[in-house]
Length: 289
Image (cartoon, rainbow, N blue to C red; front, top):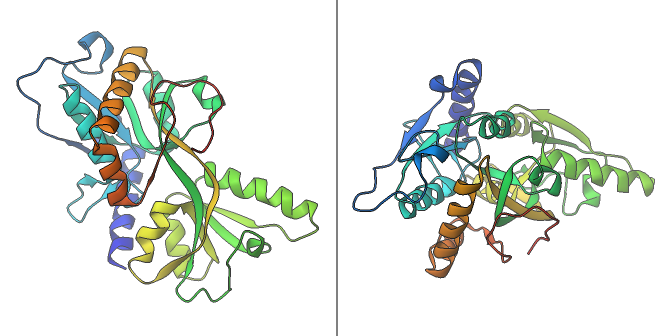
């Protein structure tokens, strides 16, 4: 349960950040690169020489707070590496998910790096660069007492999700299928953070937690939970931007990281599937490839 408690501390800090200004949020910064010229000029950045990155640090192992309240995880590693290639200093800001898009649109940060699913509708509001594939999975209590092994087995079950997003939409779409088949629908219960959802599962208030596969695998390692269903509705995730130049520069950096093997090694380390499509600013429909 150690990791669950760490995630719970992330939720507490996130609540504090949400109640104050951006300056009250948790931040972290890696060392400034030396000996190279920034690939993005000060006119296109929140702060000259700095890549300001927003994340929602509630999803271990992708982005979360460790026991010292430092923001860590796969996406933080990726953000640091991108910034290094751009000769910029990364600064990570811990912000609730629903503030991410308005913030990048208004110029409060340069890049969203938080496991945001790509949709054509979202791509009409901000610049998106798909780079990773995730499917929705369902965590259950150890031993899988309800014998949930398929999407059909979710019929009539109470399943928790973090505040409405892709997982909520996925279960809502499943409910339409269940209804058409004359089966009981899933009772979807939304929680402020993933940690809250897992606390509810631990307390027996729900029968499962729906979240991306990398997260359910992480919680399974602690032994209190296990992944019962996975691979539901896989789709690309994307980095998000408010301006063209940072988006294009980061896309070029991602192509470099794909070519030199960094992306493959990073995704292997965290058990994540790479997006095999073009690493570029994308506006149309894309597949889970």
